[in-house]
Amino acid sequence: MLDVCSQEARPLLTIDEALGRIKDSLSPLNDKEELALTKALGRVLAESVYSAIDIPNDRNAAMDGYAFDSRNIVDGTPFKLVLAGVSWAGRPFSGQLEPGECVRIFTGAVIPDGADSVVMQEQVRVEESGIQFPANTGTRRNIREIGEDVKKGACLIAEPKILTAVDLGLLASAGITHVLVKRQIKIAHFSTGDELIAAGQSLASGQIYDSNRTLLGGLLTDPNYLVVDLGVIPDNKKLLKDSFIEAAKNADVIITTGGASVGEADYIKEILASCGEVNFWKIAIKPGKPLAFGKIGGCYFFGLPGNPVAVVVTFQQIVAPALRLLSGICNANPLRFKAVCTTPLKKAPGRQEFLRGILNKDEQGEFFVASAGQQGSHILSSMSQSNCYIVLPKDCDGVAVGDTVTVEPFRLFI
Image 1 (cartoon, rainbow, N blue to C red):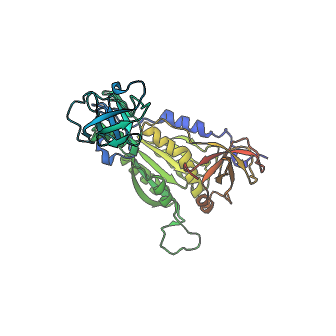
Image 2 (cartoon, rainbow, N blue to C red):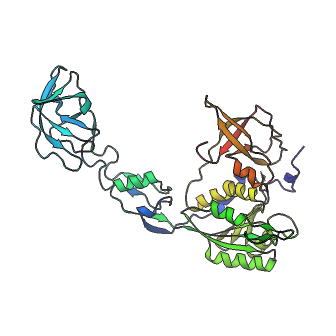
Image 3 (cartoon, rainbow, N blue to C red):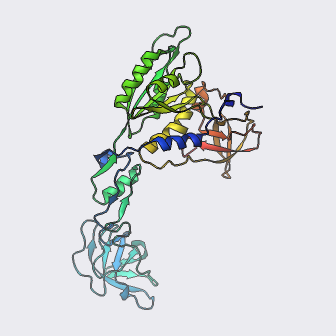
């Protein structure tokens, strides 16, 4: 039995086809702004950064111990060296190491001239007459060479890259204080529907609280986005059209929820066509089939479904990759892998389906996944309880206990 919602006069676009159309129509942002490193976490690097110095800039010790010249070793026998001084991190030994001498050295301290090796402090014996080195002391070890990490003039970080805490640390290690990043994407979002009211008010019959704006606000929490919440717009064609046109004047992207289906009060596609252009409407995904994508002038438009789970799925699978493309980021594929399903799953062929699942790993490292419960697109509770999607291909006709399925974790730990 086929999925009746997949039956259309024209075949529905797959997710890959929809993303392909989006990619073909998007023009990545080129505007840049300079930020201090302390403000750049999570932003998209707009220009590659090169190092003006070698890292490390000096030969230095990789551990606490004693620096010496390996020419003091004869036939791998024990030997004793005179302690000539100390090299501290930030306060190098100022003299010249002479034959028969060694220097006490600490991690990160500059290696004295004349030394080519460092022995761990635990491997020597400190005596009044000098430092006793054991037989077969290792040579040319425990030294960090100049430019071992990064050579002067080498690329530290190539654009475009979302800057991580480690990236900022690497840049700081080269003395970089500011970077050029892509400007933030200006995003306007609002909910549509006569039935929606704000939390805190009393519900009348037929009314529901608007969860989608809060939901989208969370999904859009990203340092690369400058987000404006435009509230709830009733199901009024003129008001919706005026709202679209006005929002498009100041935004790079408009995201709406609700009104994208085929009901008599679902105006999104019609209004988008009247004031802009519709690239596609409806895709072969469940939940989330009624998704509109187009443009109003130079502003990109995403009309998401009204059911909250469909909002999450379509945002993560369609909108988020589009926003990365707009920032110039290569569209990385989501992390997916195989797991054994421990609950039966119903599915009719026709659309790619994203079921909410609970993923676990046993002591042998094998992954198992179970349904998180009810899968209706209006049921947020099972989405809250889940930690992954169970991704079923469009031609799948159900899953039995013990079958292997594809999972997409929501985060990198379980």
